Amino acid sequence: MTEMLSYDFMQRALIAAVLVGFTAPAVGIYLVQRRQALMGDGMGHVAMTGVGLGFVFQTSPVWMAVLVCVLGAVTMELVRSRGNQRGDIALAVLFYGGMACGKLLVSKSPQGSATNLESYLWGSILTVDPADLVTIAVLGAVVIAVTVGLRRQLFAVCQDEDFARVTGLPVRTLNLLLAVMAAVTVTVAMRVVGLLLVSALMVVPVVAAQQLTRSFAATQAASIALGVVVSLAGVTGSYQAELPPGPAIVLLAIVLFAVFGALAAPLARRRHRTAPDAGPQVCDVQLPAPAPSDATAPGRRAGLAQ
Picture (cartoon, rainbow, N blue to C red):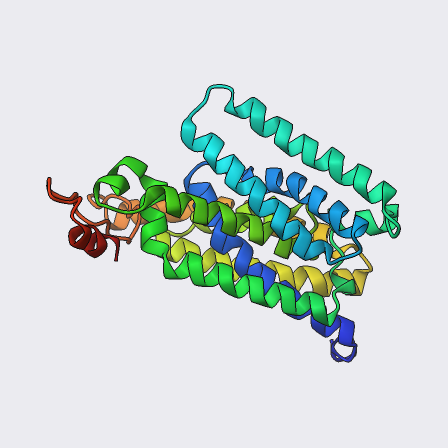
């Protein structure tokens, strides 16, 4: 362990693992709540175009991927909000078109190669340089500030959009904000677990934590803790066993999900015996009460949104 920490690249890798392990589940819990667990996977496809553009223009693939992925996320949210029956087809075209375009751009770029592309598809945390680390830290801090700071509002929108709209919350703005944060998380995590596996790190720690927790806040805290643990353990174990870090992190998360799933049934029976009349606590986030007819007044609406 001491030998591993003596290398600068491993120090950067572990810091990046902590940042991504903290950030990905913080966004993923809202996607799971909205039954959009595969949204991160679709954004990973779109981000490939940004990576390709970064190679073509010889600029940072990460920042270019952020720009393209955010535009894709806004498009996805607008399609979803309209409830168009052909929305799934449009999203499929967007996802696979992004992947195909990214591959073509990389193949024609001056510095494009199969090795460079693979590092973004499957992650290459050991090659994270100081500039990448700063980017991950800055973007991760923004994501955490939004997902934790606006927890009540985002939960209300994910739980019931109609009710949140009645209370005066800016539903469309919050939906777009969540989509943008998910897009940023995808690009932040692509250097750690890769674009093909980033959705797993956003979702698996959340569904693993749900096996044992009974409230939204507890699930969010537990999933973030699990994300950090599996990220650190995956990087450390991959270094010792000479394995790819990204797949190792995801497989560890899946193992924890299986273990927690095995423990969930006995715990549920025990809770039922000790408190047979108590129903499960779905969440501990108190939603604001529906507004009266004058809720459209600016002052009233501002008060409810706080």
